[in-house]
Image 1: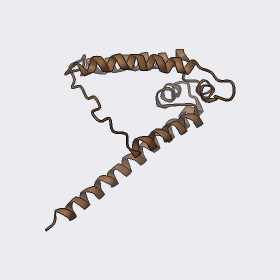
Image 2: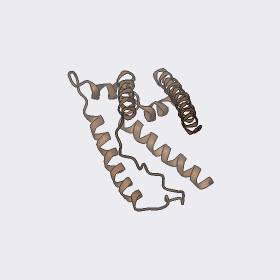
Image 3: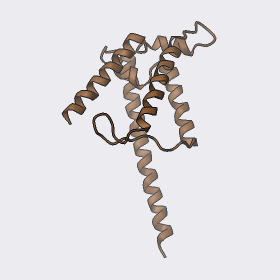
Image 4: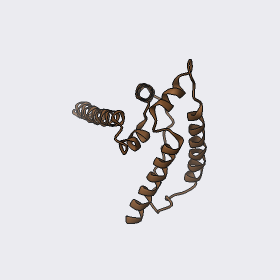
Length: 153
């Protein structure tokens, strides 16, 4: 367990350093990428392309394994279904990204600098996660009630 925690810390550190070095912790860089009609900054496209390339290779290798490098169970996504919840969640994510210039990883890294926008973003993100969990709990409760009503003779 200790080796796993050290590995998680190291991977997070490398990821955070990559975000800092690539400039992705600067909301202006992200907003510049999204400004297609103005001073468009394509550098984020190269960062995304590199991430997609690494992710593609990593998932290809992971699909052939039964356990992770540290011996844990592989938990890869199994569904490929695109539904309303996925589309709406993606739109909400993109809207927040476009307004704030942050996505979760860079915002958490930017907390280390004391960036006020990052603090506000992370608090809003945590609140959104809390609302999601609350709504999922209500949804599960309602589904259970419906099943109980249908199952009663």
